[in-house]
Image (cartoon, rainbow, N blue to C red):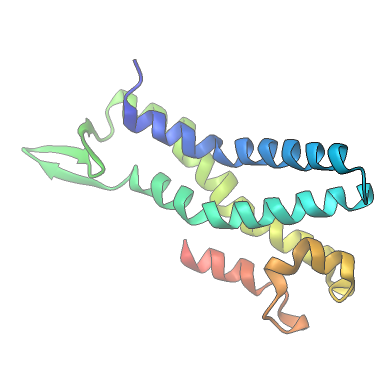
Length: 158
């Protein structure tokens, strides 16, 4: 039986994938039902994913880092969020290395990096309607030459 603490960790690690699948299904059903502007489907999916990923990013990062927040209780190191979990015991190391660390790398550093790469590839087209529909959430409020600043802010928050 997997402890609830580790189940939550796995859930947070899988959350972006589940959200991506749900977003794709939603927009696919929407465009099947209404059969209009099917060419805008990928733009809407991209915009939805960017918003969803940026909303869950801090929560995922915080939960994964909390796995390494240990305190000494009765001469034993325990995870602060679940005091029944002993730090650096076999189970803790297993979930830390198989779930928390990869999640921090992929989601914690990957989401802002991916946003920066996408915006850097489109930096000459940031004023176009199509680009603003997809990536407006990332660039609205910034001058054109500072298109990357939302990614910098996300890394700063880590």
